[in-house]
Length: 280
Image 1 (cartoon, rainbow, N blue to C red):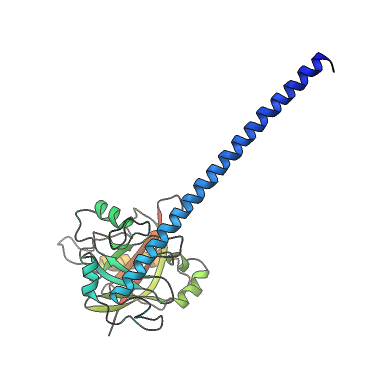
Image 2: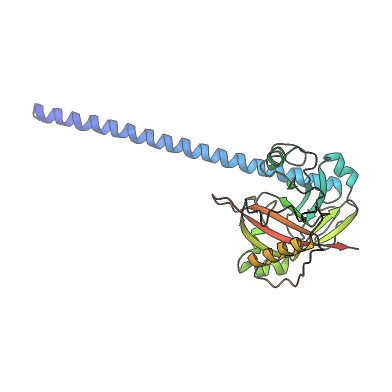
C-alpha cells in the first residue's frame, strides 16, 4: 500500500470515528429526552392519582362516597358539618350518576377578587393542597350562588376523565346518546337538594359577556325578567345540544352554567347549561 493510500485510509477511519461519536451523542441525547418526558408523564399521572385519592377520601368522610351512596339512589345525610370542617368555602356538592363527577363546589364570597380566587382553586384541591385537578368553583361575581337566576361554575377538563371531563360528551351526534344516559346532574345545598336538568350546550369565547353574564337588572337596579328571558333566548339560539331535552326554562327559574376548557390552544370554552329543579 502506497503512502497516499495509507493516509487516505487514516482519513476514512478518522471520519468514521467522528461519525460514530456524533451518532452516540445523538442517541444519548434522545435517551435523555425520552427519560425526561417519561418522568414528566409519571409526575403528572402521580399528581392526578393523588388528587383522585384526596377527593375519594373526602367524599367518604362527608357521606358522599361509594360506601354511603350508590349510582341508583340520591345521596342521603350529606354531612355539612364535616364539609364545612374541611373547608369554609364549600357551598354545594355536585354529582352525576354512573360517572366520576362527585365533588364539592366552593364559592368565591370569601375572596377579594376573581384573580386571587380563580388562581387559588385552579391549582389546589378542596383541602388546599397543590394539585392540577383543582376544585370546582363558582364565579366570584355570583353573589348568592345557586339562589340567583344564573350561577356559573368552573372545573378542569382532566385527561384522566375526572372533574368536568364529561361536559364535552354532550356535544356532537354522540351527545344524543350521552344525554339520554345522563340527562341530569344532582346538586346538594345545605338546605335543599336539586336535580340539574340539562337543556343546552355551546362552545363560546371566554370573554363572551352574552353568556358569562351577571347583571339582569333594569335601570332602577331591580331584577328584570325581560333581561333574563333575553339570556334564555340567546342560549337557545346558540345551543349545540342535538338531543331533544323536553326541558322548558323561564325567567323565574334558576340556571347553572358549567364551564370547562376545550383542551385546544385557544380562548374558547365548552359550556353546559342546566335548570335547577327542587327535589322534595
